[in-house]
Amino acid sequence: MSATQPPADLTPLPQVRRLVTSIPGPNSQRLAARLRAAAPKAAHSPTLPVFAARAGGGVILDVDGNSLIDLASGIAVTTVGASHPAVAAAVAEQVRRFTHTCFMVTPYESYIALAEQLAARYPGVPAEDVRAMFFNSGAEAVENAVKIARAATGRQAVVAFDHAFHGRTYMALAMTAKAKPYKAHFAPFPAEVYRGPASYPYRDGLSGEAAAQRWIEHVETQIGAANVAAVVLEPIQGEGGFLTPAPGFTKAIVEWCHRHGAVFVADEIQSGIARTGDFFAIEHEGVTPDLITVAKGIAGGMPLSGVVGRAEIMDAAGPGGIGGTFGGNPAACAAALAVLDAIERDGLRQRAREIGATLTAGLRALQAADARIGEVRGRGAMQAIELVDPASQAPDAALAKAVAGHAIGHGVATLTCGSYGNVIRFLPPLTISDALLTEAIGVLGEALAAV
Ligand SMILES: Cc1ncc(COP(=O)(O)O)c(C=O)c1O
Image (cartoon, rainbow, N blue to C red; front, side, top):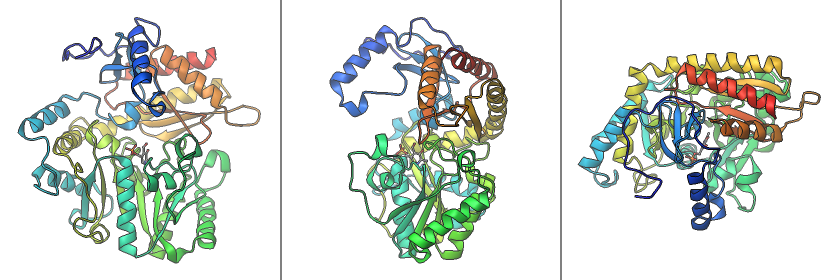
């Protein structure tokens, strides 16, 4: 146990914003120095300058005793809060029974129960025709969705979208759009990966149908419909800037896939698991995907990911063809079952919609007074502001960085994103109180005024 890690305090975390040092405080600064000495450069620049001691509800308590409002959820992971009692109890109970057997060696029931639960929630396909398989990270789920789609179609081409983010392993990285910091210096990437134009209504001004037609022309002329194994789309593009496609775009892409025998994969790693107000974000589009990738919010912070989809496609990969030592770890499965239960019991889809309404109203009020907020967009508890030069609408990444920096300095944790780095995203845990949410929007307004 270290000097900054006292014995676990299990009293409920006060749901307040309270700063007792400047940010970062001395303990965080000491840990940052140790981090720089112990880990390579790639790990030196966490988004937030503070180190965590505890987190839960809607706050993060740092190692200096500062209580920060959490609008990040560890990048959309702690949807049910970072220390939900039912999740903590389920994990503790499971690790007392066994920590690991390897599901491919000695299977266990919780994995099956989780697959059944996700099948029951799959949009547009009866549960008995859905299968699910579990892995560790989001990138691993994306890799496996591609493998499954290639096996099912006998084709090779994988088509993603401009502004996409699908992870940092090689296939996922090849599909990811942004060069810096993700792709620079790491080439070459796997072959037969393509990207087509996305729907970015704020910048392209296109209707969903027109944006889809642009994508279809690109794919048909440059890749060839008959070569496409999989089309992988984030229902709301996360790292790319919370790009919410124009109405009709996703539907047209899915219909094109089904006309041409390509597998449509909804990458719900950031947008799924009740975040947008429906269990899966793709439900807002009224379409039936062939496969869905899940991770992040599924297991309340335990590492777990999965591919869920139509049985006839999922079954294309034979026994042993996909898997891994840790995939569907029993503690992670136990956590995921507790998360799904909490979503139902605590009405968290509805809560995501309420949070969305509060955020949208607050952010639109800020926008009305500040032309540098070019757009407020998102769904449910997945909202963002795009910051621009009001005269030219040119992306203003420096402003986004300064506002986020001011906010954390005043006790509100946010994340930036976007291909141009000019978007601030809001991903609060669904357990945050209205009072904290409103206070955080107030701090954001102060930050905009100050920078
Ligand atoms: C849409 C999407 N896909 C894939 C990933 C990769 O997930 P992981 O970081 O768990 O590998 C992310 C992570 O941010 C994501 O947002």
